[in-house]
Image (tube, rainbow, N blue to C red; front, side, top):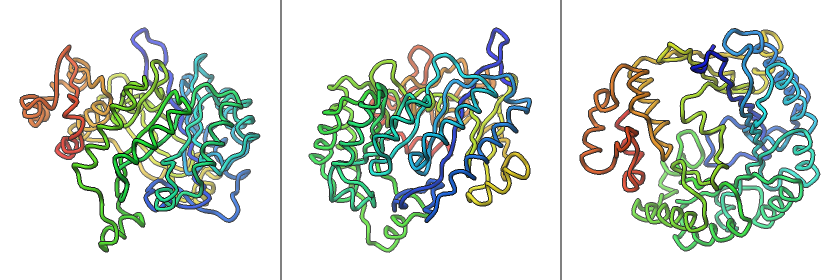
Length: 392
C-alpha cells in the first residue's frame, strides 16, 4: 500500500474500461469492439466483481478513490443505471474523496440528452466529448459516425444536463487538412467555451487500417513542417482564449485540468477494471512498482472475472532503466516537468546521469532545468517525440 508523508493511505485513481463502440475508427488502436448486441448487464456484473476482489487486496484496501475515469471504447453506449452501479460499488468499497473528479467519455451520436442527465444524477461530474473535427470531409475520413451538428447538440445537452466541467477533443495533422482548417475547428470549439480542450496530432498506429493504407502508399501524412505550424496555431489560439497548456496535448482553464490524467503522468497509483484495462501500483520504498493488464477480449474478460474475481493475464515489474525512462517520458509530457530532487530520491541518480542525452538537450536549449525542474522549452516541446525515442 502507498502512504503519504504523514503515514495515511494515499488515495488512488480508478479507470473503468467500456470496450464497446458503434463502429471502429480506422486510426484507433485502443481496445474497442463493435458488437451487434452489447452485453451491458453481464459486463457490468463483471466490473462489480472486480471491484469486490480488489477491495480485499493489500494494495488497495483502506484507500479512497480520488478520480474515476470511464474510458473506451464508447462508455456512453451504457445506460446511466450501469454507470451508477459501478460508482455506488466503488464508493461503498473504497470511499470517495470529497472533491472527487468523475469523468465519462462520450461520442456525439452515441448519447442523447436524457442519458447525459442520467450520468449527472448518478455522480458523473465531468464529460469528455470526442468531436475530433467540425469538418464533414475530415470526419468521414476519420470514420466518425457523427457530424458537426451532432457535436453541437451534444455540447448543448452537456450544458443543459448541468455539467460545468467538460472537455472537447480535437485532432490535427490529418491528411488533406490545412492550417486554416485547424483554425476553423478551434474557432468553432471555442464558441462553446470549453473549460478543457485536448488537441491531438494524428498518429498512424501499427495494426490499424490507417497503418495498412500507409504501408500500401494509399495514405500520405502531412509534411512535418506543416504539422509544426498546426501545433503552433493550436498553442497560440488556445492561449489567446485563456486555456493554459499544462500537457503536450491538453489545455484547460486554471484549476480544471484533468486530475485523472495528471495522476498518470505523475506516476501515481491507478487501478484499472474492465477488458484490457491496465493498473499500476508502487509501494512507498519501491522505486520500480508493478503493472498488470486484463484480458483484452470482452467475452474472455467476463468469464475470467466471474470465475476468479479478476481477469489479469499479464504482470510486469520494470527494470531500473525502464522505470527511469517511463518517469521522464510521462513527467516531461507535463509542462511543469519533472522534479530533479524527486527523481534522485526515487532512483539514486539525476536524470542527466541516467540519460546522457539529457545533457545534449539542455545544452541546445530544448530542455531547461530552472528551479530544479527538468522541462521542455517551447521549442523542445515541438520535438518531444524525438527525445522520447532516445529514452526508449
